[in-house]
Length: 109
DNA sequence: GCTGTGACTCCTT
DNA sequence: AAAGGAGCCACAG
Image 1 (cartoon, rainbow, N blue to C red):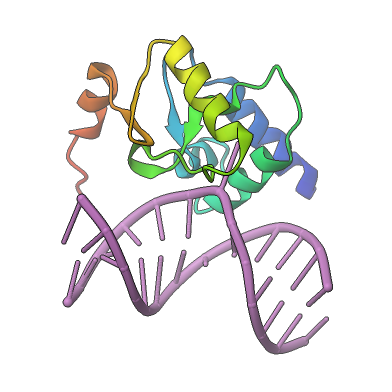
Image 2: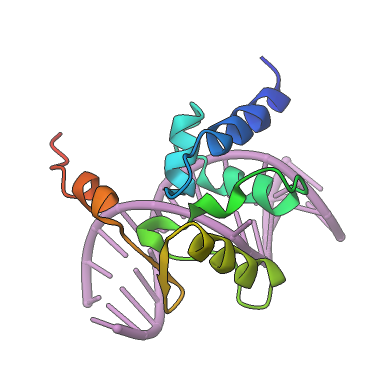
């Protein structure tokens, strides 16, 4: 398979994130079948210019907004997230009840 | 081909 | 809470 497929799978994984939900870059990579490729996902988003892509639903681990404050996209992401009912405080995405439930699942080996 | 870099993540101080 | 470091991957120079 070609390398371009990886990018396509990442984009699909992001498009698959339902409204009002969000995933970390690492989780997106995982869903795209590319474990440990969080940085790859970040790069794809950085270079992305598709306005239809819900890129704002992808954030850093722990709800952190990974985009540098200097970037205009930083504010843009927060704006879009709030528009979808998310709560953003101090550059962090507050976990919704639904996501918190998932986060509490034990991570047994 | 080696080096530095970053919209990453995890662990230790 | 904040900072530092290691592991990681793709890419530019």
